[in-house]
Length: 311
Image (cartoon, rainbow, N blue to C red; front, side):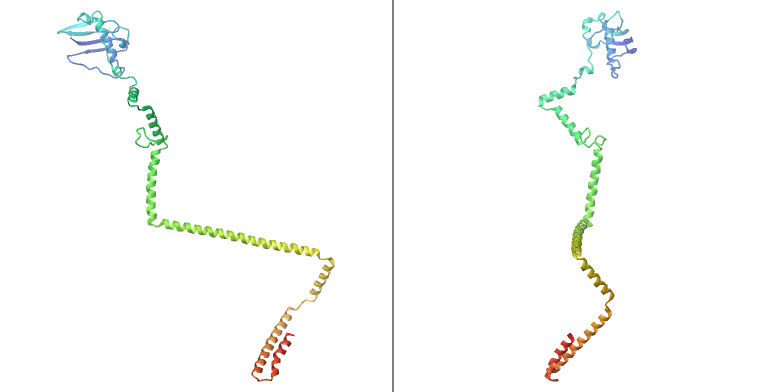
């Protein structure tokens, strides 16, 4: 016995369905909520009668309209509202109502991931939830991708991958620069430059110290001059009026009889000439007296010349 044709005219939201079947197995497929389970519900109601045959498929309360053709021993039997499968078989409707439909959702474990995780934790002693939190924190702090195998490159992670790539590039450039600098002896030049700058700074400090010392010396000199000025002013204030009057008179006399400096210098030059001549003549007389070329009294000649010139 097999189903040869299904003709469904109306059943809830289902569209019309008409299909003839040959011998063999037929696969009816479709996406979720396309009406596969509802079609089975309609077929079972048409086979056994009534409004439903299992509580899990009670989706539409109305009866389906249409018919089903059953082939039994080469004979075709058409089942309608008045005829059911119970009339042509030894199976009553109560037994047919125990037929049930197994769906994919019925084979799935509710919250399957959490169930297996809890079972695993109980069997092994693991703390999977804590491990997930730690892994998540490591990914966030390490700025890693969801896979955890490389750095993330997003605005949230401040483009960590790009920063890391640029850093590695910069390290390579620095190494290359260091190699070139060593070949060109840049380090020695920089050390020499540092020594020169250090010496220059030391010279600047010494110059600053000398400037301070010079300023201090000048200040002390000015201070001494100021003290002398104050002392002279004090002494000047101590001079009486009569002494000032006398000094003014001396100044007036001096201004009335100016000294002839040229005449005085001429006389000094003459006196120097006479002195040198006298000394030379006295020395000559002394030498001649020593060799007995002149009388002994010649020893007194130099003395007389010197006394005369000195006078």
